[in-house]
Image 1 (cartoon, rainbow, N blue to C red):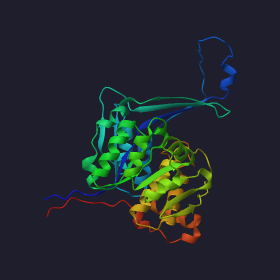
Image 2 (cartoon, one colour; image 1 turned 60 degrees about the horizontal axis):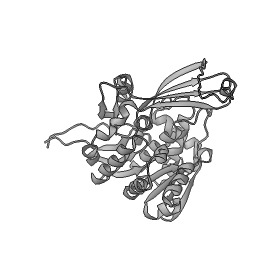
Image 3 (tube, rainbow, N blue to C red; image 1 turned 30 degrees about the horizontal axis):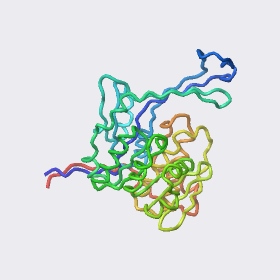
Image 4 (cartoon, one colour; image 1 turned 180 degrees about the horizontal axis):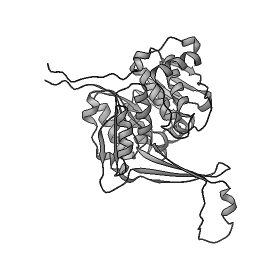
Length: 335
C-alpha cells in the first residue's frame, strides 16, 4: 500500500498581498480641521510595492527556507497563481489552499507618510472562506499545526480540528485578539501545546480573560512572548528562558519578523533541540526578515543560517547541523 508522508507543520493563517505606499509629505497637512462631515482627500505617493504576504504565507515561506515540510491552509482568489508558484517552488504543500473563482486573494493597502502615520485598508476577499476548509486529514499526519490570524471562525474551527486530529496545536491569535472573545481565546489556549504572542498581545489576553502569562504557563507546556528588539522569553515548567536577539545588518522593517520567528521556533522544536537553542533559531530567523522591505524578500541557504547562528551565538556554536535544515525528500513507497 501507499504510505502517506508526514507533514512537519500545518499552517492555518492569512494569505494576502501587501501593497505598500510611501507619501513624501504629512497626511495632517492635507486634512482640514473643519466641521464638515465630508472628507475627500487624495495623496500622490512616491513609491508602491506589491509583495507576497499574510501571516500564513510568511510562515510557510520561512519554514520552507529552514527545510520544514509545510502544508499551507487557506482560501485564495484568482490572482493567487504567481504567489502559489513561488511557494510551490520551495516545496510548500498547497493542496489545502482553495481557490475561490469569483473573488480576489486578501489584499492589504498601506500608505505611510514621512512622519510614520499610516492610512490602511484591508480587503479580506476569498480569505473569508477559509472556515470552509477542513484541516482534519492533513493534521493527522502533522507534528504541529499552527493557527494564527485569519478569519475568527476559521481560527476556532481549525484549532479544534488540529487538536482532535492528534497534532500539537500552536495557538497564536495575534491581531485577531481584538475580535475573538474570552471564551474563544480560552478554548484555543486550553487546546494548545504552545501559546505565542508579543507583549501587547499578552496584555490583551489578560484584559479579555483575566489570565496573566504566568497563569497561562501553569497549564500550557510552552508559552513564548516576543519582546521586539529585546529578544524573547520562553516560559516552561516553572522557569523563564531569556533569549537575546540576533543583530540585524541592517535593520530595515520590522514587518514579518514575528512570522519568521515562529517558523524558526517550530523548526527548532521539530529538531528536538533544547529550548535555549530553539529560541535563538527563532530570533535569527526573525532577524533575516527584518533586514528587508517585504515579508518574503529575505533568503538564505542552510549553510548560511548555520554559519550566522554560530557567529551570533558563539556560546551555542555547533548546536545546528547544515543537514538538519535541508529539505527532507520523502517518496511514497509500497509495503
